[in-house]
Image 1 (cartoon, rainbow, N blue to C red):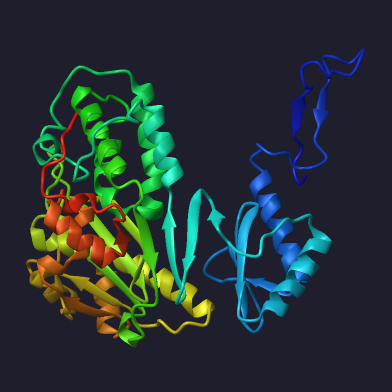
Image 2: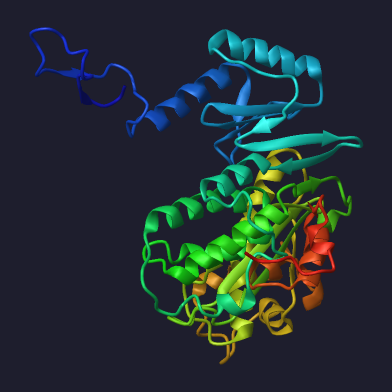
Length: 404
């Protein structure tokens, strides 16, 4: 312990005659603010002795000198992958001699996600158990399914005032949804982002929208995120798709950014967030969204390079010709000089030829699902583009699904 910390004696286990005394910690204790850093320092020290070095880009990633195996740690949970089984087993033996560990040969569960390894080096990830629990916790086991994450008519009314309801159930549901959406469900990310805004003072319409989203999850309860090596093209090893919904917020008229990043054609991260400044046009909102996405791409490029994958020049896709024009301009003009300096990072990378930008049609913009409600047909197209597998085929049913 590198700090002086005192704690009360545990009730029922006080030292006789010294009940009013306190304990001084000699070691870090779970729950103290020092514990995470001290655990990380201990872990790094042990792994260094096992000839594993921390990645320069991510403190949770460790590699051997030849980059033939990689370890990822999340607190005290982790997994290791490598090219040679014997090397991995040798490392585990060394690691286990310095720290008590348990391990399985195949990774089938990790941080609440189920991993189903298929033939031809493909993988499907799901969180069905979490959805089942979520439905049960909110008495929606027997609810009817719906085809989309949000009701288009209802979402336009979410900003309207209404009588505040109890927050417990609402916040509990939003908390679970905020865990599910960024892990394997980009299709619900936008709606979860919108509903999270009302966690302090939710009203009946907000709760109705939450229940609608839960009904959609019931319809797609067996949905998985599918991974395979979809492309070997150098310009598609690392890519980003950025989109914006102009002046989305009725209160402050700020726009929404949505982006997806992909590696070998597979979605790795996806984000929906409100922009921090008021964009003065659709073009400006799209330009800001592209800049936010490119920062994530740069970090991912560094991490992939640490892993031995050359991705020094990512590709960024957008569907707004005006935003792409600004990105390629060597100098600012009267229409763009007011845009904050921090958003000019995108232009710098393009001009230095460290980033390719490509225009796509609005129909092919997969980040659309992160900025606005989509109809069934567009949602089906996004499923295919993002690698979401609707195993039950609920959205392909012609007859409308009854909403309870």
